[in-house]
Length: 178
Image (cartoon, rainbow, N blue to C red; front, side, top):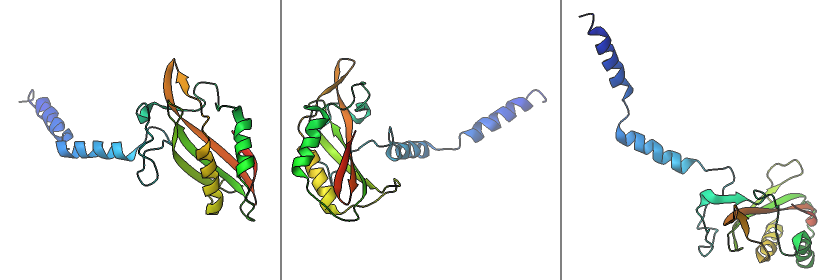
């Protein structure tokens, strides 16, 4: 009888550890897939704001950051061409509209852009909503930029994230980064 006691204890522990049903496990796995992104800042397709005609060449798990290849921002005519586009097309001056506006987007392997996201912040990097005239104009000009270069990682064309940050003082552009 003493020899059977460890067997019964082991059986009892084993049975108690298998309390989740198959449907509970599948449900928790599905929730995890919906709840978490690969990286903070991944831009998922949103039908309310994104064009269906913009498609990634790879799935979202292969979208690189613009700096992953070590070449930094790549635009035909370099940063001076971007600065020129904004200097000649942006002319707003709205008091109290000071801070930074970041426009982040994806450049696919064909050099096309899409999935634009706008974030405003004050001088203390706290979220701020800017006058829509400013954000709409910055977004319009950013979308009109057609010189984004294709990138390659290990000899393969890739999709990548890009961003522009506009430092504003009273609605006027003081600096464009990166």
